[in-house]
Length: 110
Image 1 (cartoon, one colour):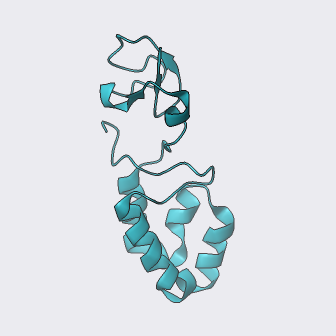
Image 2 (tube, one colour; image 1 turned 90 degrees about the horizontal axis):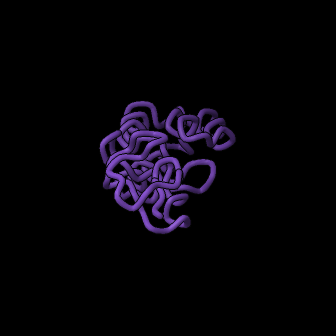
């Protein structure tokens, strides 16, 4: 058996698409641990939100980090430094959501 990286659903080894969420073949893994490592949130949306509204923390609200989103909102993205760090982290694929899962996939078909 293998598991969908997007939703973690169990799949047949021969399946090309997840029967639960419809995510494509590139999204499958043979390990349940790997299946829970990546966030279903879009990296493209996160980076666009960060680029245009990063000083307001909108990208942090998007991934579920409400507490730090409020901090970003009140401090103008931690005086602009935190916003730039987040932008670089999202671009590199090392930014995480509230559950600690990496925001890795650029779009629906990744």
